[in-house]
Length: 170
Image (cartoon, rainbow, N blue to C red):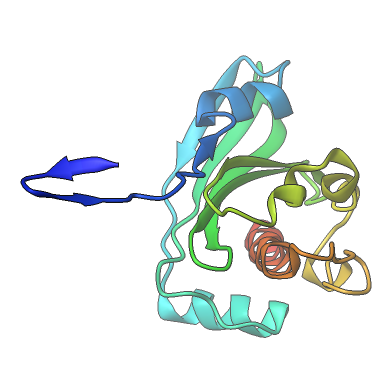
């Protein structure tokens, strides 16, 4: 409880947990890279419309992924993208990596702020994304299974990864 003058306010439990930062995600996905180049995206209306068509989902107004291309000497190793999606109420920060052909190398949950649904951090759930290429191979409920009690987290992270996969493929 936080005392404010004569009264007190209960803040309730605070659930936000940061599991890794961007540098850790880059190193974790592409440990052999000797250079990471940050790319500036031009998320113009036509591209956003194309992403919505490719994924079958609207693109959130706050969609602003960060993108790094990894290199070993001058050879591209792939991309690491970070983004966030809404869970049930709060944001979930995540990172996804793709090889130069757009095949997904992995998914990491970087920060989770909900009181429920943190099962999206389970390795077995995240491993479902590995080897997928293109948003059509990342369908919630068929390609990517739900976890009871974490439905919105599972669905929204899946939709977010679909967008990133479509972005890498465009």
